[in-house]
Image (cartoon, rainbow, N blue to C red; front, side, top):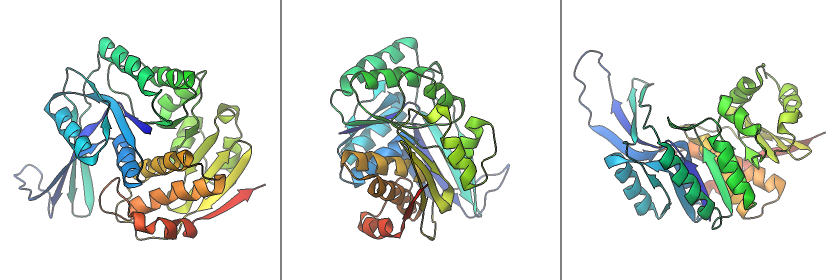
Length: 310
């Protein structure tokens, strides 16, 4: 089983309008509401791949109940911790080829709720093969909270796939226990290192830095171009096929799901790269975030070119 961690989930609300009128009434007929958050996108793709998946994090109030109901409908094990404050809404208004987002900050997690999460996590990691961590921290948690998660997983030799950015990624990489895989995109890697990474050579040079020495896999996604990858002492370039991208949102989360499922299945390095990146490509081809067409997996994997670099 694979456990996904989403500490600051949301109910994602999408309003589609032909025209968005400022300072006026906008009536919406096309509305969708889904369990949101990067880690829950990972979970959905894992289920579509036929993997047994559990999800944890913090949920509160009626919006938390909504997410729990959706998890139940999808057949996902609900390991979330209940909290006093309400889970957040994240609203996207899609209009005239644009997307305007209104994102709530979310609840503040208390110290007791944080301790309960870590205590339960120590039991959960005994039951799972892999853990994924996605996204940001909610208010109330210290910036070393992911380090605490890493130490708990490390005590059971459970590999962790981490997808976060900025200071939080840097802080986690400073810890004693390292993630098994991280997946920054090109801009996030540049922000982490404080330098421009405009070409392949600069990315590869960056991946040779000591900060990544003990991270088994570093997957740097470069948008439609594909990815640059470090695996141990090996470096790869992967080229993605040209597609008609319908909705690229959630493609990075889908890549994490692909790598998690591929690692659990024991794929070879090059197979794993193709499989993981294929999930991102397939997500971009679908309208719904965190969805893939499994019938196209073999086709997509064959279209991804992987080259080991000297």
